[in-house]
Length: 210
Image (cartoon, rainbow, N blue to C red; front, top):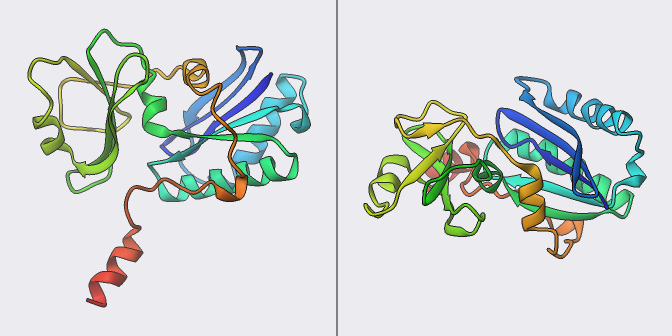
């Protein structure tokens, strides 16, 4: 079984190829601009370094969000076309779950993506990646204030979140894949972005027409 894992939802693009549960390629770096130009060469380079062709991929694990609206749109377009054209199984993955794969000894792992104006995309997982509180768009401080006081927690984020109990994610792609290895594939045409909130343009349109 050869799997392609791709995440374009945050400032860090993640691209991994896993063959027989071993990671033979891993790219995890900031891509500040021109993602639409860079992502296909990144995939081609990954396949070349693993001595693979696109048709050798058995399954695509595609992060559908939440996160960057532009990044998600670019990534999903590529994932869906690949899955449809090459008849490859495709499994949607949460960006927050990927971040929550970071190893910690706390009761709760809280992945967080800054969404500006004090808001964020946030969730709570345990060390087994079981969902304690599902992915949501909400006020960061209000969310943190409602965590049970008898639970220890670790915030994982790439962003400048105002909380001392935070670390940079150290993602574990194989852990996420193993969690979802028995998930059923979804028709590529049925996979949609998981934005969790409306775009700024949609919000402005509604505000101006109410």
